[in-house]
View (cartoon, rainbow, N blue to C red):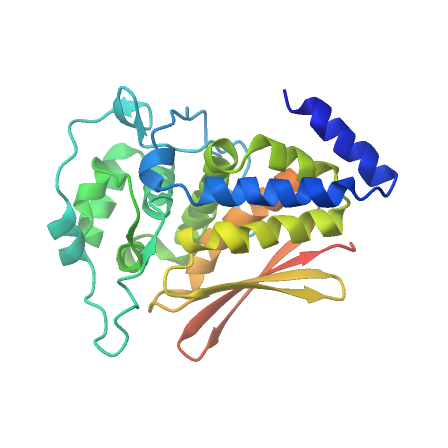
Length: 299
């Protein structure tokens, strides 16, 4: 059990001992190791899905959201349904996506984690049911996602183009809620599969500011590559907290920020402070969509 070590760290924090520095360094190293494991390895873990609660108002935190892991030892499982053998979807994914601009070859061809698609499809099915969700996906040009989910990194263009295909059908508000729930589900996946339990316990016992800074630093060093694609991830310390920036470079919709907000909202409220205000502020800066998530320490 890691509890004795956690207790030692807690005592050290209270006594201002240098031991927390070593514990933090070890935890970050361990987190880096876990985050750098290929998705093909981490997705082999079996993660059960309990339930997903959709936020009723954009900006509210979702609760009760469990992760989706599309593969286990018995075969690929989604929403409690066992799926058939995996098909080759490479051609369909390419057809569903816009070819990257020749002047920016990295844009669109960069990869993001499969949970961008897995969790978005899951949120759609929770909201509309399997049949209607499948119809929405078909009309968006992503029919295969109804029963053939990815198990490894995917091209970022597929995620963003899926949103463009869904927006005319369900509107901005519904899509924003879908994306927030998808981001929260992704955070649950990270807590269950990719972020070590010891690191989670350590963050919980630290004061709020160092806990927040440590969590965001570790994500930047070891996990940002799974969601930033061709864009950028960075944080800025403010007088009243920390601003998290996820800048999306691939041409997308500003409401994509709801996905990233859902991820950080859930992680921060679970590990740092359940009441900390997490306020979104999305803006367009040149060719970037800047998803600014403001975390306020004083409230």
